[in-house]
Image (cartoon, rainbow, N blue to C red):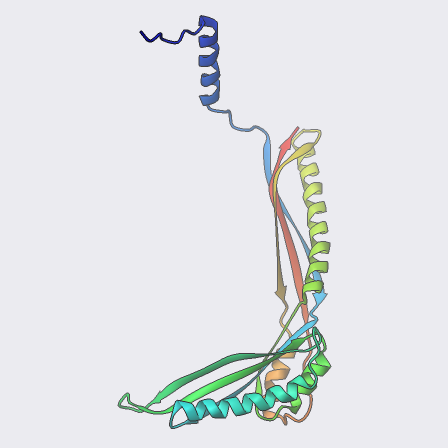
Amino acid sequence: MRMKPWWPAGALLAACMHAGAQTAPSSPPQNVLQLSAAGTVEVQQDMLNMTLTTSRDGPDPATVQSALKTALDAALNEARKNAQPGQMDVRTGNFALYPRNNRDGKINGWQGTAELVLEGRDFQRITQTGGRITSMTLGGVNFGLSREQRARTETEAQSMAIERFKAKAAELAKSFGFSGYTLREVAVNANDQAFPMRGRVMAMEAKAASMDQAVPVEAGKAAVTVNVSGSVQLR
């Protein structure tokens, strides 16, 4: 005959009390303050991205592709002469073929485009190289921040945001009649935004100019912002 397990009355009562304590709803936290602060640092843009482009059309895709390849190869050969890692990197961009239709919707030819991208920190090297490439024309210019520049600026903006967060928490704690606070949770987010710049306008106007000279460009500034948000426990 199987025996049923025997539990002492005290142990059974303790187990029930422990289970009840685990399932009992916890009271909401008291005197918790939500706040945020931001730090913004302006910095000169140190990266240039120049896109050169060309388009071709013909009766069939093979002809168009061959013409695009010839133009792209010539541009690559010229660009590689001055390529230098970090200062001017060279890569191909978009390469596309698509049919051209007549009024009846039938294909009566093919068109295609190809791009070459020059990017890096050496603005003079990039603009001069772009000016010497004759098989393609200027498609666009963009400025940005290098990884190193962005990292340095984010660190500075982050320190600024954290100090502002701490100062605001201390000030609010005092205003509410508390002696201080402890940090509960925090989130840190960073982003950068470029200011309107004259460089892109100058570069686009240069499309009509002779491509045997350096394309005029002028970089602007970017604002790197770090936001710190979270909650503190007033004490």
